[in-house]
Length: 176
Image 1 (cartoon, rainbow, N blue to C red):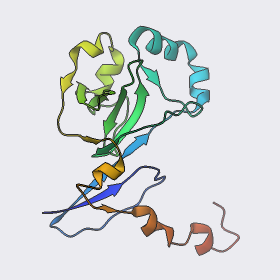
Image 2 (tube, helix red, strand yellow; image 1 turned 30 degrees about the vertical axis):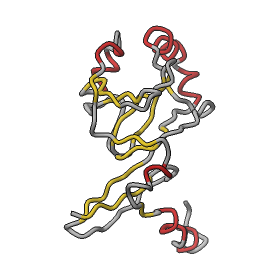
Image 3 (cartoon, rainbow, N blue to C red; image 1 turned 180 degrees about the vertical axis):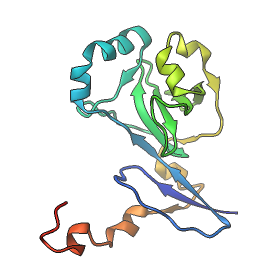
């Protein structure tokens, strides 16, 4: 089976990739899923509670962390902790209040399963650090450059860069 690796870092919007039956497409990279600062302002008490009581620091648009690692498959980062680790999920369908698993990547770049359900985790995050289970299905590299030593990437930005925009394709009277 052939593997096609696509770096999702910095990609906004959706796209599709048509691949042969013998090709597996693997999305990779770290995608920061920040929330609007207005969300924090509207629910300030709740976010302060998660931060102070559970050491879960959600990421907001006005405080985006600098990420110094690269993952295969892609990791959707939603929060950090005071130890320099990150909380998030895998895959395009990851949502915080869903039944998707939720993971922790430590500052030592080790991955752990927090809970098989992010929804259960959010309802009861008490002592979450004491129940971490090592998880080896996410490969973590120190950078994309390091990952490129082991796998070849389809540079989707180069592929998409030559496509015309919707405004180029449609007449001026179409509203976007």
